[in-house]
Length: 118
Image 1: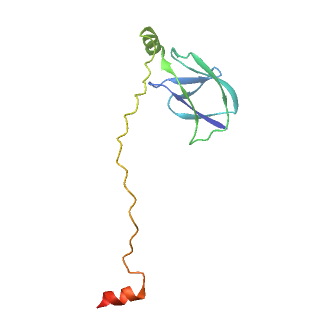
Image 2: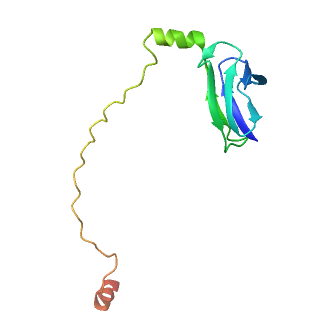
Image 3: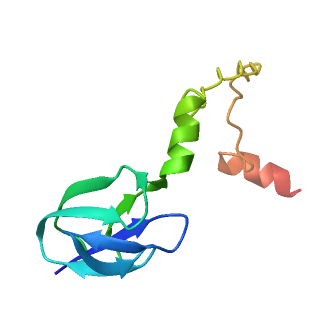
């Protein structure tokens, strides 16, 4: 068994291969294979043909429909607008730090350590 979820803004019936099978926005089961999905209301696209496989209840195959009136309005307005990517801001240059000499907190020789204890 495979799992499918049909997204739609309103609660409507989902037709799978012509049969009323489930409500929208709920996960339901279908057999593995090719199926025709539609909604009982005019939508865009009117129907979708999909091959369903390798799904689980927690990871269903998702399909999205849009009400036909909304799709027609978007098409009349020139289609959906795409967001353009802005050019990245120039990175601020930081001054390079000069390499510092490694200094030890302890003197390296015994004599230096003895002299330091005085």
